[in-house]
Length: 280
Image 1 (cartoon, rainbow, N blue to C red):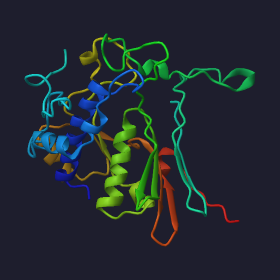
Image 2 (cartoon, rainbow, N blue to C red):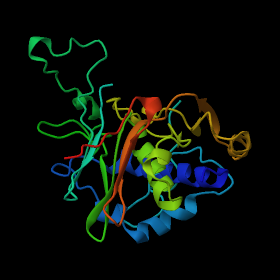
Image 3 (cartoon, rainbow, N blue to C red):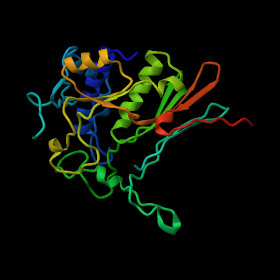
Image 4 (cartoon, rainbow, N blue to C red):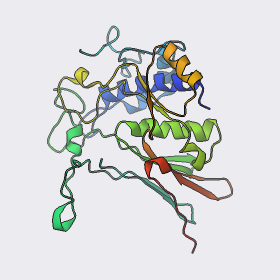
């Protein structure tokens, strides 16, 4: 489930996806986001060969979904030198909700004063790069990291995931989906298994107009400390800049409903997440 091959290919796919996210995503009321093309099987087939199975990418490579080309422009574009919580819930009738409430307030805020209402700080997720789909404009919603997730099977919800952790949210959700779908793990195992993530993307909370300068760390790959030494060595050999984390990577909760209607739920205890059931 956590082989070097599996982690490498997933991490490299994340890099390509983040490159497209950072280049094209913005409020669809203001920007013509080419979502059908970005999500199409044809575009995926064009992008997939960019993954080298033996070498970690050290460049940022958005594609061109408008012209259906695997890379934008003529080549690669290398870079220049708390407040979120989670909630997934299902009722006995099969209704499922996934939510990731977040105001992104500073850690030193006053708690909202006597009213207990804090201000939202997600405006910082807009940037100031002229012409960019996510550039700040009056009335525009920022492209944010929040990705509460529902998985449907034959039109019915069978899985819900919510993650806190900024740019780790998409990545941790992917870890859990791979654990559940590819490896058959129930939530209790899926949320506690070793995880991985990369900082090979723009920082979603840096509004700088110089977007290449906001890229966190090229070729980075953070692994849970429970990842085997053999896998760590293999990934380092492929060119990943490995960092080991002894705490949770992202803070997930997960809910799954089997074909018989039985629900399973878990939160990563290392991230102070939990699950509970209510019997009526």
